[in-house]
Length: 437
Image (cartoon, rainbow, N blue to C red):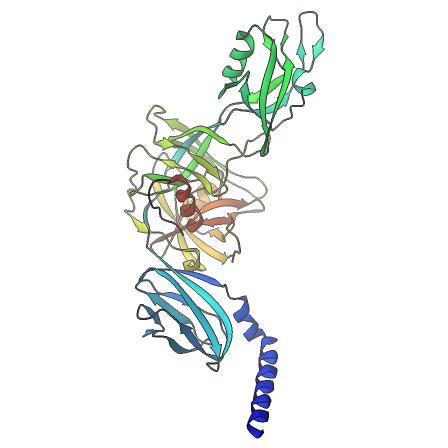
């Protein structure tokens, strides 16, 4: 009876202790620690939790996991007041559990060990030509007929700016010329359109009107291509795929995302850089080079950039293949970007990573960077349009790409983690295994 009472007392004391500890800032940090951690096979990963308490760390997987330099058989004592060093020599997933006093489970963590991926970093200036899956409506207009009367066929049919016209009389179109040719070719001037608005598709019908020049029109201004200059982020020599820009391409007039119909990247040469100033964005100005010599296609346009396959290997004169670092390996401090500010010459410029932004969900704003290189500041004033996609190199690894500039301080901006861009490559592969983070 005495033993039973003692056990109850001990249990109550432990419950009270755990309750008190759970309200302490140090102990609550353990619960804020992510439930899943990714590391690279064979590479050390350091976790600094900052809880001056000792725990027993348990796992059911043995012999290939090293904690603080010691092999983890099934359990090991760790003091989380000190950084926790983890290394694994085997791919796979580990289930870890932290126990207080070796008895009370307080935190479970899944450790995923991934293979090291190597890519050729970019920095190349590229011309981007992206044709939407149809034509994008950028304006609604009237059509004045031969008697001088104004009609609004498209407006009356419910078409809006930002819509994409996909089919005309059942035929797939890619260009404004396709649209005009079908309208003026078909004898029946009652036109059937298939239109996409956001993620929904609908059909509508209208009548073409002959204008005072004898040409049939339906009252639309459309765009059939998005073109500009950006920066290549990486090239994967094993698969032939590339990533660029680090952010999605949207139509400049409507702000709508351009859905890929056809697209290509080509060489571009920077002829001039307009320096950025506070509240005045700068830009790289360039020309397309040898447009018939296409570097690669554009297959997808995602929040993390454009991706496709190259038609020939991409060479960087400054680097061979380098590892891609997981977002968890990035840290505040010195780094470099690769970009072009004159002609086609790729150059390295110093930057500082000022803040790593912990993300529950991937986004293009994973880190805050600051340009520190005197020559780049003098030439460009900081981050300018056309620099998006410039690879960020830290500790000899590709960790990300430049994505956005702070308008009120063009020396600073955001970067996206390379990890999220590498994940997009998996969407381009269907027949064989791909690298996936």
